Amino acid sequence: MSFNRKIQTIQKRSDSLLCVGLDTDAAKLPLHLRSKKNGILEFNKRIIESTKDLVCAYKINFAFYEVLGKEGWTIIEKTLALIPSAVLTIADAKRGDIGNTSSQYARAIFNEMGFDSVTVSPYMGIDSVQPFLEQKDKGVFLLALTSNKGAFDFQYRKSGKKRLFEEVVTTAQKWTSHNNLGFVVGATKSTDIRSVRKLAPDAPFLVPGIGAQGGSVEEVVKYGCTSNGSGILINASRSILYASSEKDFAGAARSEALKLKNEINFFRHTFF
Amino acid sequence: MSFNRKIQTIQKRSDSLLCVGLDTDAAKLPLHLRSKKNGILEFNKRIIESTKDLVCAYKINFAFYEVLGKEGWTIIEKTLALIPSAVLTIADAKRGDIGNTSSQYARAIFNEMGFDSVTVSPYMGIDSVQPFLEQKDKGVFLLALTSNKGAFDFQYRKSGKKRLFEEVVTTAQKWTSHNNLGFVVGATKSTDIRSVRKLAPDAPFLVPGIGAQGGSVEEVVKYGCTSNGSGILINASRSILYASSEKDFAGAARSEALKLKNEINFFRHTFF
Image (cartoon, rainbow over all chains, first blue to last red; front, side, top):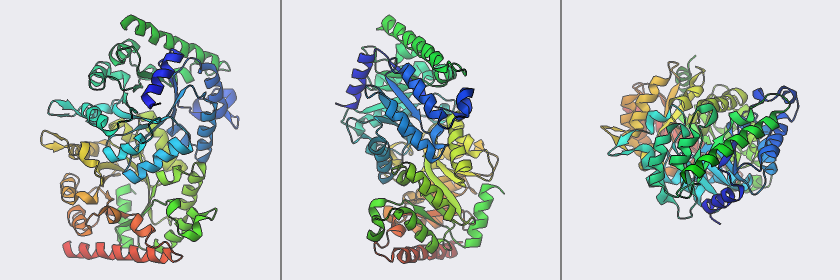
């Protein structure tokens, strides 16, 4: 099954467009876990157990694990093993390098670690991205329009009528025939999501920027979904993980996740 | 001492602009090391021992270590420990993410691992790069014009009179006052190196693309050096590491490195 088809299947079965980002920061753990040797893994385990029926995907932000050195890699592997196979896994690693190097990154993330997908930067062009697109059941979320303020530095740069992020979306779609390419489109630029959706009517969008970063769920659903009201993976990290810093953190995370899932579905039913 | 000043000092003392890229591929090790448990580390150790007096820097390509999982991180750490402190270390990791995530990457690479510098992708703009520029003795090589064919997809895109890579160089120089920002400028686009040098007269350039990728040493030196005939770090990886696949690989690597160092210096003396 192609990667994009797999997302459709998962979103239908889970009735959820919610992705939880495991940006687990040792300094933000609930106090009773902060001193524990396996605190971060224990935290991830509890978060996954309490949200796995509410999500279509988990996104693991590599930076928060790399900072722990080799121990971080062990935690990524053990966390992955806790995620049910019916939920999509995203390596949020923003990789991308010359062809022979990207091939090594793809092998590391897809084959050694076993992720379903990875975020990739488009700056270095075709041969930096294609090694991640070779396996049709594995997919890429290519950075198009990001949720941060730095997005305005280069991504909106116009050449003729097209802005750089639009050029990235148009060009990159020619790089695979495996139906396994999606895009990162930030929730904080909601009206521009519409432009990207027009250029890529069926591609899955990974949408960060809801929650701590302030994007609107209503606009993201309205402008971002495919014509059948799905096709976007709305990510929330900090607002769910750190909903409570007490012992009930997992319950609080579940409440936040459920609230967001329902809010997303409310707007799906309103607009589609 | 600022990062850029440190490079000047190292290049003067070593009389070398050569950077050796440790893109160590388990599948390409000499046969007698391929079956050894610590084959990759042993290989790096021998390469470093036999070239450390000929180089200004070593560049560690993270992809080739990440593919080994947590063991790869241990090898990076142990390899770093073998590099003399008088030689610059570059984490070739092409990182870059929203501010709070880039801060974690910066901490991992500079503070936990102890690298002097890192390669960063500019696509996400200011807040994705600045966390790597906060410590004045640690530096960034920001991707400007890369050596691969995919460079033509977006980096040459014109907006007004400026191409994207030129815009990146102009804009990014406003992001730090610490004299610690350099650029990646590929050797395969040698005449365009001249444009980048005009825009950034004193910034250090990390120049990949010599050797296996076919860039010209003469043109890189002529067009890339600062006015005093230094300021570029010419990287070679495969052509040095795999100069021989026999037991004499380290000697062969030294010969190749010496040849390239001398060729670079020949052109420095010719043009400056």
